Length: 198
Image (cartoon, rainbow, N blue to C red; front, side, top):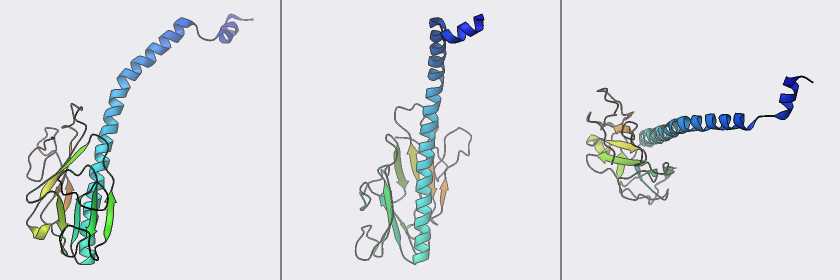
């Protein structure tokens, strides 16, 4: 029997196994933080994209139905909670009387679940970030309001500001993802200022 055949039957030596485990440990130390960053970044992108899609859909519904549609922060998926913190979820509904309450013949259009644990989503609007109302012509509160949603990652993430997302809504009710126009790796709000994470 050849030496190679005997060795294949014996398996790995203890030293070979230790070297293999050491290499795997080093790779894990190098790969896991990068993977966590990718997961966090993707969660933030998914959150801001979901809000963008639902705000655009609410505006379209207002135009299509010919009356006001309200979008607000909601932690229960059925009522507005009155706060400017939206990470707990949000709802969109027809709002004929404009009172930001689902009543009478108002209809719930959609409800979004809470964002990933640790993320914050803050509404920063000129009048009231707790409620956005799209009028029948698609404008936001009659065309005299505008603002920005800022989505930030977990507070423990040292680079969360660099990965922050913003969503801008102009007075015409049009929604756009915030960009980094000055090249400093921080996205900007509707006024062109760098966003800030709480």
